[in-house]
Image: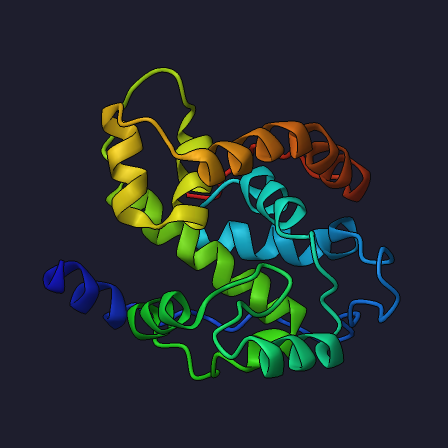
Length: 199
């Protein structure tokens, strides 16, 4: 694990162009992950993961408002809350930051949707590296990566071996499957196929 982390840190992540990124609306229900399709495609290509995976995760994580003010209030109420349009927890972000040499801080996720998407794509890349190539057939690779995003790497690897997910992970997987077509439509509207992966 330390070897992979050291090797990965030598390949510093290139910053994503964040010019003109829209702040999520203050009004609950006004946020649509499709508004960030350009950043999803760019970040997914850089991380060499499927844009459809990243976009579907964003749809799955859209259950709460993501305006920076509301996220600050949420943090005041729940100090270890997840931040950003991709709902990343601090411990996860710190691993991604160290692995990829990011200069931004965890708090920047709430104020910068493009950066939050970039960090999520890098995290999915890291999960993909740790997921065995062979796994139980009941899940696709993207489904296991989404489960890893939600439940953590250790649980993802257990699910890949056939350990059944608990109720929260099953609920996340159901929503992931349900949002897949909406995520594909968002990417198609942007003019990009959802499953393309940059190598």
